[in-house]
Length: 195
Image (cartoon, rainbow, N blue to C red; front, side, top):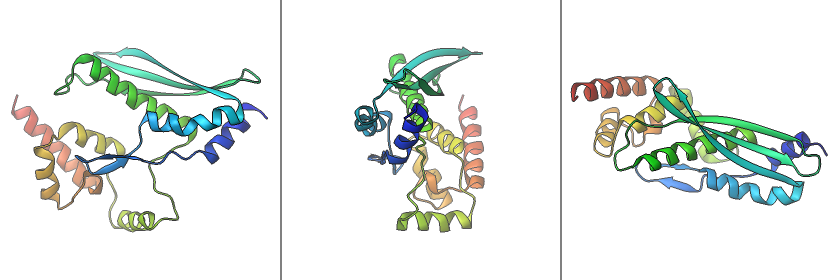
């Protein structure tokens, strides 16, 4: 069996459920550690080895963590990988610089693994939750992943509840694309005015 055939089987068989909960944003998620734990049985089953590596890349005045997830075939020595980048924040309240780098590394690794193993953030099509989400999406265009990330970065524990109340939603993930755009624009103006 070639490495691509092995990877195809792993992508089909591997389940990495969202087993963690963010009580602030009120959403379930998976992290890199969850994905690595889900992968472990396949290493022995298909005689493959997964290696993760990080590198720091400077682009302009920003630093990015470049994470690479590489799957090696221990029988043929072939390899296939996926790369992802995450930006370090200039400043994150309550974190020192090593924690900021660690957060960016974890984020980049998670998305490198997501790409390699074809993990996405959608619900299973045979669940009631999937059907409810599908109906909601038909009503209004949902915010993009970039908008969701921007909202999580811009709003803190104090400002998030007020913004959600203003738009009449319980969670940031329920915002429409237009609502998210408005919230982000207004929050940036507010933050700029406070400087």
